[in-house]
Image (cartoon, rainbow, N blue to C red):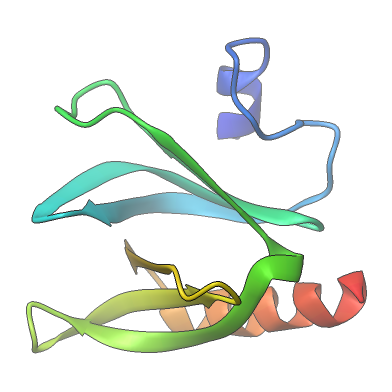
Length: 114
């Protein structure tokens, strides 16, 4: 769906890779929740912000670098957060739909990539 939109626009995600899951998401950058799209491929997780944000960016997390994926409460009480912790201790937080499915798919992709 969105992979066609981003094709040829410098997106780090190689659209030839197997996209396992994609959906709208927010990525926390400091106190700002940046809107965009989150992709899970067979090799990495990619967040690409849309142009409506002050902090336009792209984040790529290799599946081989993920130490833990877990749920987190957004604003301390909303059950829609996804927390990814890398082997080097970097913490990335996202707001996603169907976070339990995201966690299942990410963990399955990590096992498949080993």
